[in-house]
Image (cartoon, rainbow, N blue to C red; front, top):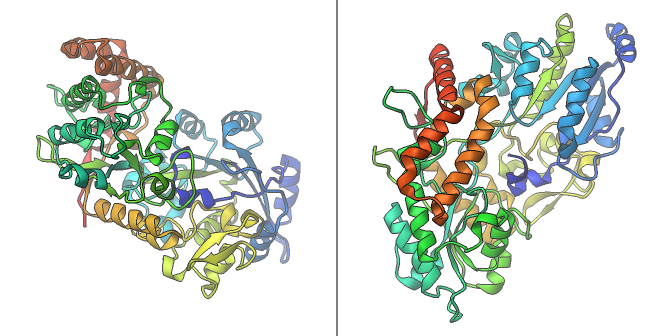
Length: 529
């Protein structure tokens, strides 16, 4: 997720830069934890995107210490430095009580297998918020059948989805596209029929950036996920599927018709956001949760309406695929994981204290209850006038949010994630501008009516996949880019697939499908309620 998180996540200020306690200090504090008035020492090591990193011993930490009767020793590292710091920390053997990470990666699996983390299966069912986490998410953080991490649940139907200039459709007398042929007609018209009315040929039909970002898949059938099967009944990567071939043909048609930016293959995706906000792109991508203020990686309707006062943005529903499926690919369902040190295997009281704190801070608060009258919300947010202020009927974190708000030490969203999909409905109420409220309402409405495909690959851990997939993805991206811009004929499709398989794709497919079979996991659809 990283920088793709919605504006709601930008309110987060993870706190604490206290140094993790040394083995000597930890042993001393542990020996006194059975005393009646002693405070249990808890060391915590995690990354943050926030700058500056909050200072140690702030008011938020003091509130946590007082409420839970602990000595909370946290150290946070900027995420662009965190991976290296975490590797050094783990190699030192001086493992803090709690270690955070963004996603399951090869190191997470390796360290779990090596016994660095504590299996949590015997604990998680004691806490209501953990019980609400879907099995697919628990599978993702499980290694060899054991839960080694507490995932911070995240709405699985979120993420950036296609959006369109509805006012351009209206001006040109076009309908919302429902398939790739209609989308092609719309995109070409947006690029050639002067939808902004300035008399110049300066608009782009479909936004696309280098690395083929964002992948213009209008449903799971055309995505890069593991949805299709080969002649042997094995699931295969989306890059080599028939759905991908159809998508590449579509993009090549757009390229030839001048409906893509001529420099898209070398253009950073941040620049496409700038172009869309400047009123020059007709079809792009965004997720629910936007608010006011121009940001490098988000739609800013206020800025857009400076040059296009009548601009109206709508979400594009997923297309119906040839196999009659109709829906997007689900996100992983989590963002952030906390692991507990295996050194606490003989200290269940400490484990339970840590999980109690995580559980307490994850409780969901509906948007209409996010105010000073709600004691829980007010405390977690650091108090009205200190950690937040009410502006336009919604809580807005102050510049000193991380100094006062205990929530900043634990969570990623005011009001919590644990209700999952339901929490997305709060975006409309949590935003401060009318145009953002309208967009968030429309986007969530579309997503609530959509089915979502849960990819099975995120629920297993294949070392072959981890070793070979990055190079395969790079190879596929380069070759498919060549096909779109005409440097390689699309008639080479079967040859491209053979090259992909020969570069290790066959090995990845074999190992992934073996693990899926062993773990009795398969791709599945979650139907809209």
